Image 1 (cartoon, rainbow, N blue to C red):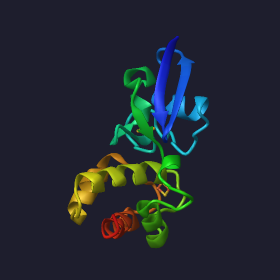
Image 2: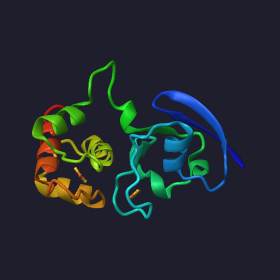
Image 3: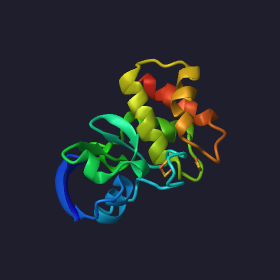
Image 4: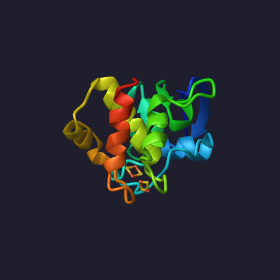
Length: 153
Ligand code: FES
Ligand code: FES
């Protein structure tokens, strides 16, 4: 067992977990933050993307113990004072989702993109989101959402 301390969505948490506990499991099973989805568990689909110290990572291929002491933001931590994040607003406005399974990971990846590059081109958005798979939308409205958010962030 390992003691892991993280700051998750602004709140410090410490849990004693098995050494091999994945960050996705730590968030979902230990903290009940089920907005982080698990689609493949093999680092391919991107449904599990969260931010660790401000950068997007796949939580299904990260050990919680390896990021001990880090700051983690999940989809639950994006809204502030009951107001959705501009990226969440943009997904809603452009209807950038259908079933919603990929959406938390898409949003977290897209937020990282706009923190890294202010006005990405359509090509850059598509390339950045390469690691996020959506089985429903055909990506068109997801790209539109990121474009829309780039005018607000
Ligand atoms: Fe992590 Fe699919 S669940 S990439
Ligand atoms: Fe269903 Fe993307 S909206 S997988």
